[in-house]
Image (cartoon, rainbow, N blue to C red):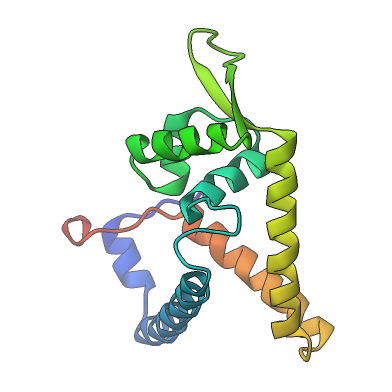
Amino acid sequence: MRTMTAAARDQAVTAPDLEAADRVGVQLVRFMRAINRAKSQLSKHGPDGLERLGYAVLFSLVRDGPQRTGKLAELLHAETSTISRQSRSLVAHGLVERRADPIDGRACVLAATAEGERVFEENRILRNRWLAEILADWPAEDRGTLTDLLDRLNTGIETTPRQTADQK
């Protein structure tokens, strides 16, 4: 990751860069509103009675493998107590299990069960069908470009520290 001083950052960003960033920002706000609207249509609970945050925990465990509660809280930008509550619900539903941490046997990690993976896969298929309908009339090249650009944007967001006002 490249690092710059605040002065170098200020000099590197031009007025056209800021205008382009503003246009992207407006589209990101629209995107987040659209996603939130789609999620709200599902209600607070998903088809299996789990809260949406529970699915985010399950997604992380299926995608990234077993994790400690603190790491999940960090990944999902949530309080550890919130993740603990969600984890208890996921364990009660048989979607997640607690295992001894292979690095520190005194601690435990959470891991998706076979049933958790099945529920996750079922929901992934539903999401993919919804997105496929939305993108059905897009040329394949545009769909590929969108995927590449979202990956690039997400990588940039994940690897660039957020500058606060007092860092300027």
